[in-house]
Amino acid sequence: MAADSELACFPKDGATSPLYLAVLHDRPDIAQTLYEKSGGHLSYSGPDGQNALHAAALRSQAMTEMLLEWNIGLTAQKDRNGSTLLHFATSILHARGVHFWIFRHWYTWFHGFWHSSMPFYPVLQVIFHPWFPWNHSTWHSGMPFDPVLQANPTPIYQSDGQGLFPIHIAASIGVNKAIAKFLDKCPNIAGVRNMKGRTFLHVAVEKKKWNTVALGCKLHRYHGF
Image 1: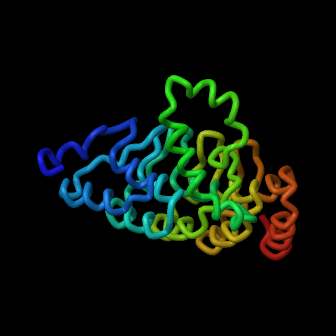
Image 2: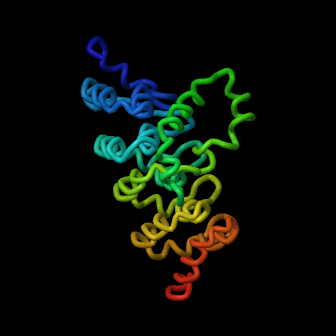
Image 3: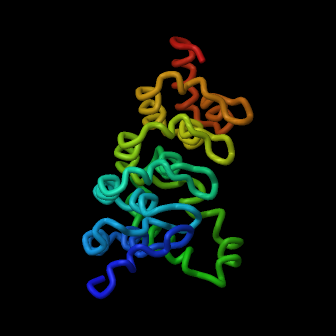
């Protein structure tokens, strides 16, 4: 970085940047060095249309808040599936998050290995893809969800490539806390429908998330949607 600070500016888009890797491997010292030596002019790019803030959400609240302070515009970017950072932060929540949070370092290590395993990626995808947490929302990053929502609540009203809004994602995994926060920010989001014409209550019933169904029925009784 001392020899050429512009190295932190690459790649510009669509590939994994040094900052993304530093954040993913939980190295705030390296991330800070990249930011300072580049004068804040650095690439945040990550794989599959993601950015360094996605990696931060997998790590900690402190890392997430640091990147939000550097570039709040990252919250508005969409990945190749049309998901915003709020979609992602919601999808990695889980109602039984404590167990998964304990093993977060192992999950993050494998996430990095997963994206660096070419040309074996197709084989790994077939063998392991169904079981890992970033695909099925089976672990809980915990606190990073809150600063992401606070920084930019606008994506609450944005659907991803499958027509799902963040509230539908929360309902599909039974995270009532996230649903309550969405409704507190935007009460009329309760009635928003996905491309199949379903509200979050329909999704909760389909996924058999009975606590969320109970919440939805209570809201319907008092507010209607």
